[in-house]
Image (cartoon, rainbow, N blue to C red; front, side, top):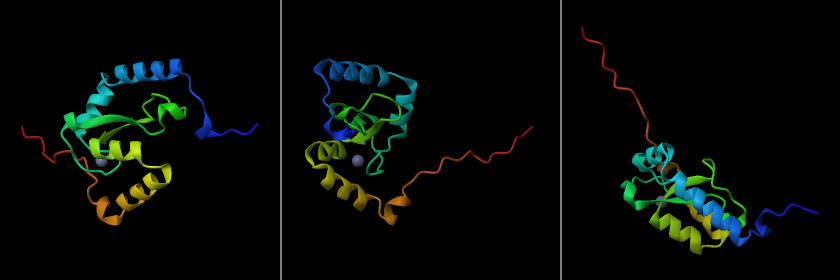
Length: 118
Ligand SMILES: [Zn+2]
């Protein structure tokens, strides 16, 4: 039998369990840190933490798990688009976003170059 990732049937019970896990993952420092960075995973724009939601890269209903690798912050607009677009349309949207212009929005975290003063 072939493995068909998009045809996995997930039971109601599993969905509830993953949502429960997502709830606790939202309380972790790891998630709080991602929110305070405020960058939407998809469009790369900066948002206030309150406007970001947790999104599963692979949706739970398709067998995605609530793990750090599968959960990303998404702005409401991206989250809604993802919900209502077909996977193909969504891919096109992402391709458009990853144009070179977008790359310069990537934040560089740097230490302040302060020298020690004594
Ligand atoms: Zn976004």
